[in-house]
Image (cartoon, rainbow, N blue to C red):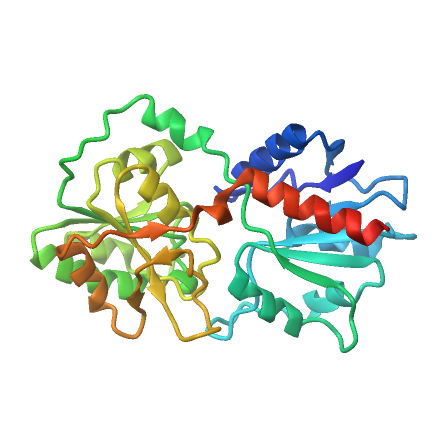
Length: 308
């Protein structure tokens, strides 16, 4: 049986989708599982740690489970200041068997965090995206082929998502006649001059998820300016709701980790994003990385291999 360690206090918008898709995939594959906020009493049972917020449970466990697997939804990013070096102790834990990342380009970053000589597997598994969340919105609205001149900038309003660059591009989009919404899934940090941006004509703030989906169902495009990315699920959802996903790219093997979107604009030349919208560029998504079945099969194959 797979013991899935979950954080019941997590408030991120995407985490319930991850858990729901994982559960559906495990059931479809006939893999016995238990979702729990607590560690198992059977120390040999494989444990999938679904959030970094659960690492401390492993540190405090005595004895600790003997077969640990980590789902990492992000990696240390040299363009931010969010790295907690002390958190890397988990990569040296003797029970750690494998680390699963959402993107292939994240794998070498994870490997760098391992101690020399480590036999821990670092694997790109994707994200088990549960489409029921979006389908509920699609079932209640008519997604028109005639889109509004509306641009949505998705992402939490912190430095990871470069709100100042969003604002700079927003002004240029507004000059071209677009309505612009910077939609954060959490309340903006207090040091951002949100009131001033609103006075200048940009719609900024936290939106309920259903209202956010309704917005995407009308938008011309969703533009991400992230310097990290992971799978940038907001852009995948934008595509599902009929808005063109405009993703940034960096240099080879550097974030942002958005390689499943093609084409992308150069993050060092962000006006390319405006050109993509104005030229109605068609964007393709490699949907393997959002597949429930692919994720669960990858996960279980690694767990079975490491249990031999």
